[in-house]
Length: 539
Ligand SMILES: Cc1cc2nc3c(=O)[nH]c(=O)nc-3n(C[C@H](O)[C@H](O)[C@H](O)COP(=O)(O)OP(=O)(O)OC[C@H]3O[C@@H](n4cnc5c(N)ncnc54)[C@H](O)[C@@H]3O)c2cc1C
Image 1 (cartoon, helix red, strand yellow):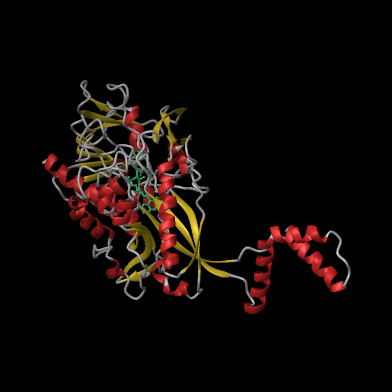
Image 2: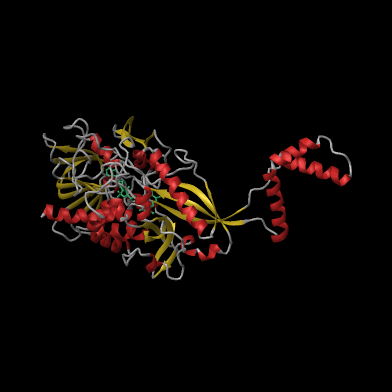
């Protein structure tokens, strides 16, 4: 059932078994796991069914680190959450969202990645990844290249350093219409819209949540009491709500070791170089990488990444490269090039049979600016012979893992929102190790493509931090990281907040490290795993 807290009659003190905060991907899919079960679920969602400016304004905040999307554009506050913004065309009139599991190495403690290591390995998560694939409708679960590269072949690369990886696309419709509808129809689930959770109240010892305080923007206040609470409000809002809940623990709930909000990670996205193809027709033979296409009804695309062996050997972070086909003009001569002017001057006097003034200066200009003359010549010859001057190339669009960094963090800003609560401040940091790793990864991938005779690689990364035009992917990860040791993480291996018996977290804020894969498939795998755990806990 769906109720609107603004207009429908709701109890001032709602009692339920399971209270979920946030109706995005994690919150909706967690509720869905309880459909028809002997458990009463109350899902509190700040937004309504469509975006509203007053509600969206609650997400405004300050960016004080690496330039980032304005925070009120980075996390839609509406039923459906960030999923309402997924928009990749995948054929027909369908939209898709990229899905891929993390690699086994992403879960490991790696001596070259500080703070790395999940409490469990990929094999533990495997059955949950299988269930996540079914939820996404991208089965079979395999990501083996040969299962998906049927007619479009992967590149044959000479060394064992670089491999083709497969990305799949799940249909957005499932997440923003079908699953929310299923949840809304369930008799044992109540979705409360326009219900902003303002504070988590605990007992005096701070080890058990006793109720959540919520309000509509119009000032209608109510509370929810449950046996178990799950925060699924996204990787920026979850630390904010914990930090704001400081009635019994002055540094915020779950923050005994000052970890809430730290280790904020994104997947930095940037343009990293270009491969000018030896033969334009290679654009056709590399179609696996160039176009999202359907294989047995599942939309897929290929990308390149380093093999696990190379990541270990070179001690690098995980990263992938998408090949974006384009046609480029070769560099043209600078019109005011001194060398070109001198060449023209000498050519003019030679054709007139006159004596050139300052010929030694002209010769010097020609010698020192010879490149411009060669480029101009090549340009002219190319135009004459081929009638066009465009080269086929791949731009390398890359996205990468970041080193977990406690200084990259979400804190409370001094600015207040419409409820008089502190907004967030985000200090996203990218560190030299991140960029050194990116530069080396690109050298290896570009180098191997050159060795395969595909063309000539032109790197575009100079080591500058951050690389120009760096963006995130709206992936808000790490801010309530998972660790068995409470001094190393906010939640334990079951996503329970350390020290608080009945408070759990769902979503990407629990990731201790983030590989390069987009987060949704891992969010779903962890969410169904959490549902299994809570079923035991609630019965
Ligand atoms: C444009 C875009 C494209 C993306 N593309 C991809 C992709 O291709 N692949 C991929 O893996 N990931 C992608 N992502 C990232 C992905 O969408 C998110 O990582 C994921 O949806 C996070 O899910 P969530 O449930 O944790 O949070 P959200 O989906 O953000 O949901 C949080 C919910 O909590 C509610 N809420 C917040 N605060 C409160 C409060 N105080 N009280 C009550 N409710 C509250 C919000 O209104 C929202 O509905 C993309 C994101 C965007 C924006």
